[in-house]
Length: 82
Image (cartoon, rainbow, N blue to C red):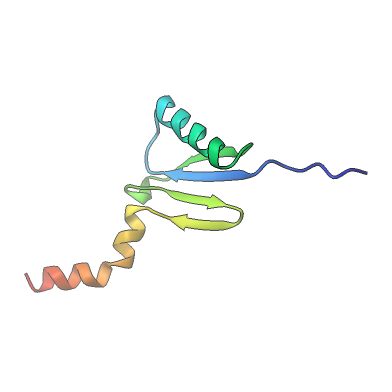
């Protein structure tokens, strides 16, 4: 029996409800880079800003929450010395 190839899936986590125009632009750009990709949008307000992307079992975290977590010590030190 012939194996059916599934289209690639990209999950995009956003901290807000995106407009149709915004989502259309994202889809169009993704289709150029990854033809046939299926885009899943999930809302996660804890991200604060930016986005998190999951594609092919890899996570890319471009969220404000992650940036704050990664720089927590620097931020605390800056305000401690202020």
